[in-house]
Length: 568
Image (cartoon, rainbow, N blue to C red; front, side, top):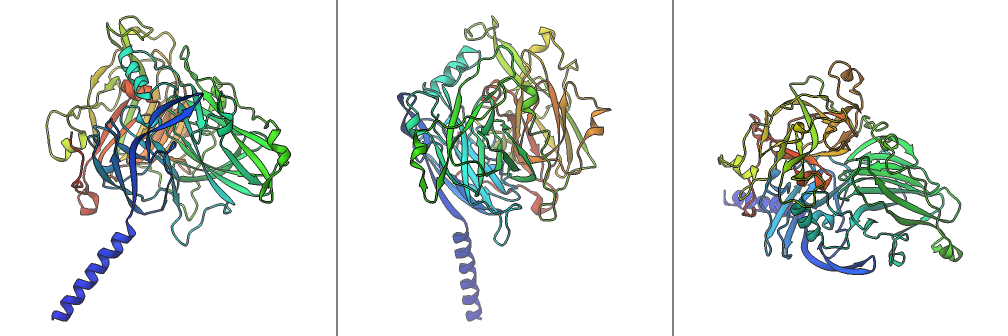
């Protein structure tokens, strides 16, 4: 009996040892670091002193621990964008939604649970505007024994599109908050942290990708910028899109991609052009009238090599520049959403909800709120705001929604978020009445039953400024079954839905003065944020929160919180 008991203890200890070995740890130290760009030097908030931050490499279905040490002077949270975190919202990251921030000197060991995701995702800060410099890519490889659904590339290259201000980003945010108007535009866009040849004091640090003729390269694209959609292309090369938001798509070729803040894409590049140097470039797409934007172009260089060496005569040549659409070309901006289809093969099946139990219709708008002291607004006596269903979301203070929900605390939020907008009007008409501009300001959530099948129509409006809205849902990916311009027609538009192979996304850009329909199943209990990924719109209140209730079975219930959850 003692022998069996000892053997049992040994087996138990062995299981613990294997489990500990399997759960890999990563160390993120959030701290200030000095960087020089555009002829000036400043301190920025970083992870491990890097900009962009470190790329995480994981395997599909793996769980990891990221020990986040806050060695900065500001509160911080980290979000794992597109990672569904099944049954474990505790590590999702949005400040005052699922956690209180990690305070200076604090540590939060975040368990990141990967499940169905495969491809490219990313991580970023989710507190104030810290994500301007605190972000990085996540590469999720197939499980052992599985392969990519396309020929294995010769090399994989993360391409992180970012944004840079000469001014301290904390000051940019504070001025934006107190002024009540639009934020000051950035001074540059960046590719892997570098502005590129077209900016002052930048050409020595321009990011370069060396390629061999005849080889194929996988570019793992991340749009970590703050304020606008981007066009991206490579001179004289086509790109083959094979994935988006951690899910594979049917391959299609494009001359350029349109990518919104929050989105990720996997694109194949065939090095099939004459040996030379070629710019890869990104510039803003901005459709909003009378809204300033950063009208610069960031570049990196694709240069061919012969054998192991760059051809010396190339170094003095000016690279070829790609032809990208005009900054206000709305028709060009829909080149991705109009072509994207899930791969939907035997190895990568999809499960589009067909029998809908919950129908939701949400408007997203730019609004105004009274403000007698806001001197930065172009509308006297008002500040700019934003809303979902005419409710401008207000973050709770002193607590977070997940903690309040889990511990049945009152006074943190209400469960009154409406299924439809309180006021119905011609959403995309010109010259809409000014009385429609003023939203309510609340912390309201929508409660969903576990196992619901949800259809959500996201309708853009022309209140104040019609523009694109890249909407991101935490905790769930969704199928984009339809989209269009103008007002959604409940009788006609569902007839055009793609219910066969719609793309499976976590972020989707609502077209200017248009609509998008998404479908998803509520199989992930917890508290999950949904918001516009244009940072100014999120700060203005274009957000809401879902609570997905526990199911009946143990595997359908939230896991308990970790012991080291940060306190407010």
